[in-house]
Picture 1 (cartoon, protein in one colour):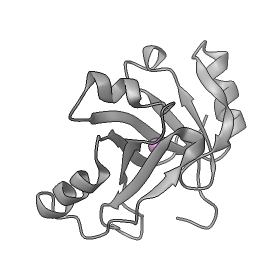
Picture 2 (spheres, protein in one colour; picture 1 turned 30 degrees about the horizontal axis):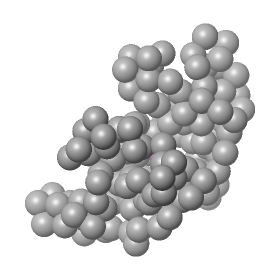
Picture 3 (cartoon, protein in one colour; picture 1 turned 90 degrees about the vertical axis):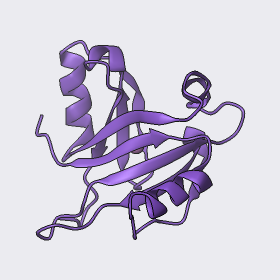
Amino acid sequence: MKLGRLNHIGIATPSIADSIVFYRDVMGATQICEPFDLPAQGVKVCFVDTPTVSGMNGTQIELIEPLGENSSILGFIAKNPQGGQHHMCYEVPDIYAAKAWFESQGKRVLGEPRIGAHGTLIIFVHPRDMGGVLTEIMETPKGTH
Ligand code: CO
């Protein structure tokens, strides 16, 4: 598998509105996208950009708030009421090759490739097989970098 850039770090939060205030006023973020719902994943999402350096897009912070009663992150928020680091997301050129690669090593891929928050295919790999880190793998958006 060809490892690409660290696209984003997922941060679960009980309130995207409160987290936006934190990233803007405490962390000094100036590029904060409008939050949007991702019902298929049961989350509301908001991207906070870090600066572009040497023509490369900066790694983003992906704020995720539970959406609906079956949200995949309700359990995480129950265990971490303040929210916290939820996952890391790396880009790859080919999601199906990446899925086959992880499975060939006995890593548990959670579900089939599906469209993620950036509009490209994603998978998640079980944290217990990944050094304790829930790992998202996404296909690099076309036309970037
Ligand atoms: Co993500």
